[in-house]
Image (cartoon, rainbow, N blue to C red):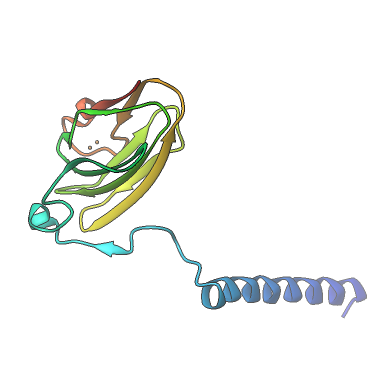
Length: 153
Ligand code: CUA
C-alpha cells in the first residue's frame, strides 16, 4: 500500500473514533441530548391536563411571566399577549391538533409545536414595541391567518 494512503486511512480512522468518543462522552457522561420535546401529553384532551387546564398569562416573579398556550387551527390561546418592557417570558406550548409553528419575528424564538409534545421556550423582551407572532408550519387552509402580536410597553 502506498505510504500516503496509509497516512490518510490512519488519520480518518482516528478522526472518526475521536468524534464518536466526544459524542459518547457528551451523551452519557454529560447527559446532553436534544432540548425539549421530552415531555409528552395526550393531544386528544389537552385541556384536562395541567398546566393546559389553565391557559393564559401567569405572573411568576417581578418582570417574569409564564404563558401557557395551546395552538390549534388557526389560532393561539391566549391571543392577547402584553408585557412590560424588560419582561422575561417563559412559554409552555402544545398543539391540540396538527403541527404548528411558533415564531416571534425579530427574536430567536422559533419552535415547532407538535401534538403530543410539550415545548418550552423563553425570551426576554428588552425593546418595547409590537412583535409579530406567526405559525410557520403549514397547518391547513387557514395557515396564513394564524398570527397574533405580543405588545411590550
Ligand atoms: Cu398553524 Cu400554520
